[in-house]
Image 1 (cartoon, rainbow, N blue to C red):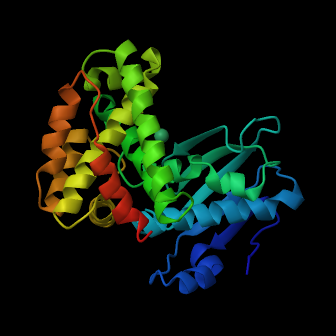
Image 2 (cartoon, rainbow, N blue to C red):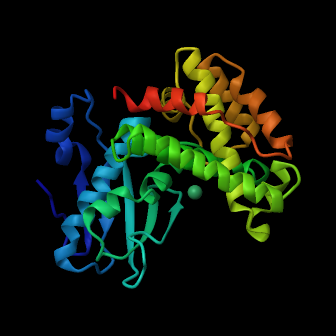
Amino acid sequence: MLKRISKSRHYKYSVSLLLFGTLAACNLGSVFATEVDIDMGGAPTDEQHKLQRWIVSGTTAVESSLGKLPGKRIKFELVMKPNANEPVPFAQVIRGAPNKIRLQVNTEWPLQDFVDDWTLYHELSHLYIPYLDYPSFWLNEGFATYMQNIVMLQSQVIDKATFVNKLQAGLERGRLNTISQPGKLSMIANDMWRKRAYMRVYWSGAAYFAEVDALLLQSGTSLSQVINQYSRCCLTANSTGSELVRQLDKIAGTNFFFATYIQYGERTDFPLVSPEQLQAIALHYGGKP
Ligand SMILES: [Zn+2]
């Protein structure tokens, strides 16, 4: 089923071909056609199959939540980090045609540890919204941080209780970081790298999407549905936060995205997401007990 297309270290797979059996068995109803191109970067031969399985199943998990990835194909570049104390110590998105994701890996970790690692889901989620202006950067990181957990929940990598715990623990890290990083969120996001204000920026953004998603669920839609539609009709490489949220509202037929965005950019405190909101989200994406 795996088709080797060249003598180099590059391998191409059709996600639909590889996972057709799994998808059919799960009755997910749709088959995606994104071509996955993996540069193994010198990974030991006997570890390559494991790495392929991880990347292809992670890509399918994200597409099951958010719809087909933008672009006809996606490229992955693996960089060996033999001594890392986690399977994926670092990763980055390189936007272009095709989009590329560079992942540092320690190939010695078992497959399950790769599947349980959030990095791949996070980086792939980034591709569904544009690269935004720095004061709105909390939307970029917040979206990927929130979505990595939704994807893991929907693909049953984590259960509902773990989802709620992970969100609560992350939000707490964001709250603590807000004490040492005061000021308006848009200003802190604009200077995130110099200030090393990652936790405040990432988790204020994740709180934003949790809050908006909870509102969308009450009105009969969901963030994943809105983003799915947005990525097919309107996605551009670059945009502004303000333009993005207006477009999302247009698709959803609400003003939730824009009204909450204005409020968040100005806020100097850390947002409160209630246990009830998290439970409602977990129930929607996590399905039956
Ligand atoms: Zn990120």
